[in-house]
Length: 116
Image 1 (cartoon, rainbow, N blue to C red):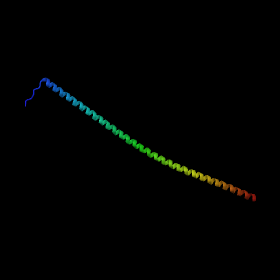
Image 2: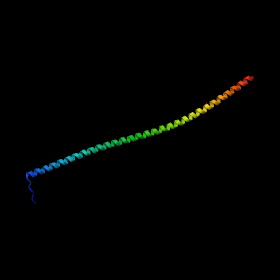
Image 3: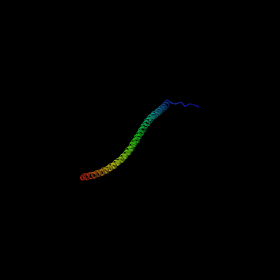
């Protein structure tokens, strides 16, 4: 096997191609490093977004719980108000009855006094 002897120009051309390819490989390597850094940043941002989402869902859950409590309290107050109105009506009825009874007793007393 005979080795081909390359001329100076051929050596220069081959060397230039090797340097060019090395530069291309280095550029690709740099691009990969940049992409990996961007990927790391995106993953970090994604984690932050997920944390915010979880916190927001937690807040929403608490708000819904408070809303349910408020609705229950409103229902209870409405029922209490209804009972208070019924009690008021009952007391008014009793007061009217007692006023009539008092008037009847006064009439009775006046009649008794007139006889004496």
